[in-house]
Length: 227
Image (cartoon, rainbow, N blue to C red):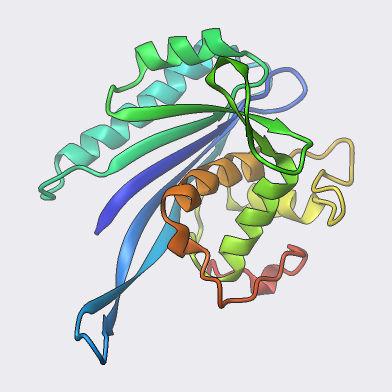
């Protein structure tokens, strides 16, 4: 049963693309506890959308496109037989356009979607910033994404549009800085996905089981549990 949708929006414009990622969370039955006989469930994130927007797209046009995508998902969820609709949250790297962009987006998208602005920083810990923003270290975002992948808490359907670009971006990341090795490479899809994952992990800590060891190198596609 889907109980949560989280979206990550990484903003670019002239040099970098903007990109959006969408994840939905479901609880997968794992059988019954041998002691209490209660049903056990494991959370699972599924990557449903990865899209990169053209270079130079204005923020005004981007707001329109993003709002339409979120509206389409809302319409599909309204036809669901579920008694209650899933929670929905959009995490935005809004360090560039700032508060005016956030306020314009809030007026445009569905009221049922929570919008959380963040700034991706070079620090070591998350912290509260002026204007209601939260600072999230870039390396923490990337490491968390790779951790969730390595413990098989994140999957994607076969032949997901945009996957090949996403894979290329992961392979371009430096293990020491979490930035692309090449100055011409992009990381917008990875950051969009990492933002979406950060919101899910914040609310569902069971996505990061403590007893599972994670490989955070990100350099071996054969170890990624997507297929």
